[in-house]
Each structure stands twice: as C-alpha cells, then as structure tokens.
Image 1 (cartoon, rainbow, N blue to C red):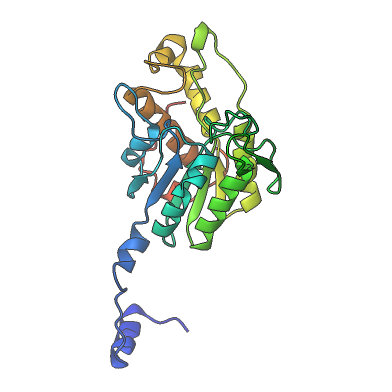
Image 2 (image 1 turned 60 degrees about the horizontal axis):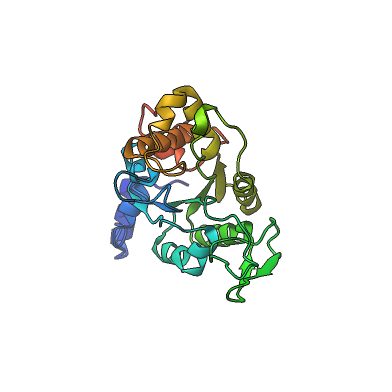
Length: 267
C-alpha cells in the first residue's frame, strides 16, 4: 500500500509526529554540497594564477566548497587531517571530488623526503619508510581509497578525478602521455566500487581541450609555469571537467544530475 502525501501527513499529525524534516534535512536532500579535495591546480590561488575548483560552481546547480590546498599530495592531505575535516562535514547525498597527482611523485625513502611523495606501487598493503622522519608512507591508492571509503560510509558519493595535464604545447609541439597517477586514480575508483565511487578522466578531457585550442592559445593560459593556469585557463579546465561529466566521458557519475544545461562544450 502506498500512502498519499496528504493522508500520510494527517496520519502523522494524529499520532503527534511532526511531518516536516528536522534541522534542514529537506534542504540537504534537495541541495547537496560538492566538496573538492585537491592541490593548487584545483585550489584558490593568487593572481595571475587560479585553480579550476573556483569555477566549478558556475556550471552546477548545487553549492561547491573548495577544500583544495596548494602544494598538497594525497599523502600530505591525508597526514594533515584534511580528508578527516571533509569527513566531518559531509552528509548523505553530498559529493566529494578527489583529484591529486601533481605533487605525489618522487620517493619518500631519501633523507630529503618532502613529505608529499607516496610509496611507489598500487597495493594497499605496500608501505615505505620516510628517509627523513621514519614515518610509514603508503601508496597513492591507500590514501585515496581510505578517504573515499570513509566518505561513502557516511552516505556521500565520491568522484575520483585524474590530475590535470601540464601545458601539453610547451615547446611548441603537442605532447602525449599521462602521469601514472591518472591510472592510479582510475584504479582507486574501481577498487572502491560504484555507485559509491566513480571516475572521471580530467586529464584526457583537458588534453582534448588543449589539442583543440592549439599551440598559441594553450600557451597563453600558462603565465608563470607549465602547471598552473590563469583564471581564463582555470575556467576552461573546469568546463572540460563538467563536459566530461555531462557526456558520461568515463561512465555516469553522481555529478551529472547537477550540471547546468546546456553543458559546456570545449573539446
């Protein structure tokens, strides 16, 4: 038997039960929040640079909270308790986008360990020792999957996004090849499993954008180095992300339902 809304409300009133959700539960369900976890390519940064996370809100219909921090890797973000900070904030129905890779390379074994390099490999039980602090260092997969599973346990949904590419026209010739962390991100999403976690290949989406833009226009988006874009570039990188989501570039993610239409078309 299905209750009609009016009958169900009257029945609740008859037994003294409040029919309205408590403490804004209705607004939470109707308008979930998107949280972003990443590095400087996603974060709010200083002029003349900017991270793409600051522009995502233009293209989705729900609030975006940008928790990306410059200079972080999956390891340092995890060690600093920043995933835990997001875990405390998320509620059922929220979406967390995790995107790392630019700062995760190198080896933690040396005496000059920068606190960001992950243990090489993809196994969750593979560990290293920091040559500087002696701390146990885990793989990229461990840090991302641990965070994703904790968010999913709270009823949130996770999009594991591959890192953005560097300037693919640096030197005047279009480059190819992706960092190993692109594959690692895809594997982490697969290991956590849908529907809790899904993957979007932001790297390939932006690579396609740069191929379409060509040499001069792409180089103009990089005013200081080959990693960080101008505000115009960050906006385009955000649009590439949203286009990949809207077009099911790597399968359907929970963000698709919140994309404003018409969706961007930049690649």
